[in-house]
Image (cartoon, rainbow, N blue to C red; front, side, top):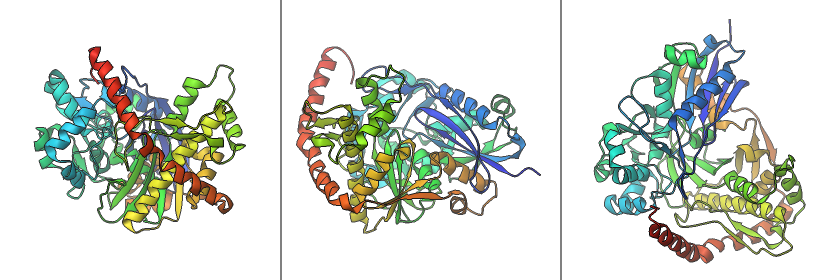
Length: 513
């Protein structure tokens, strides 16, 4: 008899990964496929939702190559959060999806916050009004694209569309994918009627939302023919990639924080009860029990990639990242006086400033590429360490270790820097694909391989490698963190003035910002 298999699909910003696991969480096979992204004008980032499906098909085909599809007992989806798709009554996209990176809705944030009440929005959704939330992109479409809005039957997340492609039927999703849309009542686990009324939006124009692990449907014959899945394979409600990354690291206790060193750097602490505060954003936990108090820096490896792509010669075929890391490791703490504020796309917690921008300071003619590279890593790390400390202080809890995931967790420099700057043990997850593993845990519980999703997380998370902090350098990082803590306040007014200046040029040229 073939052992049961579950599949976790992670549809992220840049690619789709499909990973097959056994009931013990051992990786059996994987497939992946890129998702193209466009930047049609400054501050705009879009994708074609049909590319989400094309990428999912290719990833599943690669994952299932050599596997017995009949052994797959279920699948679930982890998806990029806050990205907004707009679909007609048949589930067909009526415009390109607007990504979580997109900044076009800055004015909509202000307008809707005035209409609905910023504090009420925060209390209901766990989120301070900010461009990251999809709610303000919905507001933008309703206001700026009336023809599109008239054809829009559903404003939905990525998972909703992929479930529709896999199993047919209306757009539907899991709670942890619905709540990042920014109109979900986190305590009531339903769409917020007061916020929908303030926006003038009917609940029927949002996807139905279900607890994680709910059977949403089964794979159709058409989807099976495209993907290689067996017809009738169960599809279970999943969640956003951040919450499922936490689940994949078994972040179900308040003394453990997960940190995803990915395109964005996202860290979170589990809480059994609902709290909201400007120091974090609150989300429904991946297993549907309790909440994640999450810190999010929008530009993580995105910042590193931007720097390398724009300013480093990559034409010689060498591994540029390996070279920069090796050189940066030989530099002292503080990058010889260079410092970076890593807010390329505004800042969420704790400042909630859409006009914030990246800052490089302290540069001299002696600095080289490696100094800037290390300064970027130090800025990102100090930012996250400060955010976790603020969460600990506000909640009265103490985090004793991080579990690190994502591509950046493979960096020896970065993970040791995180341990040293925080003074906490950093445990490296056995998988860098924790979001896909979290989705697979949900599928395993849905398929009855475990009694609950929490049980599946405990049984499938796997072992970790511990990185101990070097306490001999702790004071140097504390001194550097104190300097870093002054940088935002010192530059916020300048950045706000620069953004306003740029907007004047844009409007003068007839562009909309």
